[in-house]
Image (tube, rainbow, N blue to C red; front, side):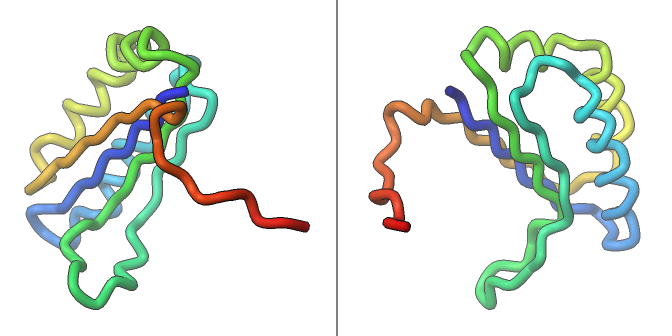
Length: 105
């Protein structure tokens, strides 16, 4: 499984809601196992620059590529790009991740 995490900051703080709304249309693309779009809680005292977070889970690199090739993805970019200051994206394979042990019940 591939995890896809994208972080956005708004050029103007008042545009954060429009960025979230422009990214929310991504949830209609059928290739993700899970896709979430949310405001950053900004609870980290050192870093509060990120306004909106996209979190996705994809069965394979091909599914992620199909998601990015979808016309709704292009529409989301059209809506969001003029409003954002920064965009950081990271994709990783869950099978290669170092992870904590499950919590015992």
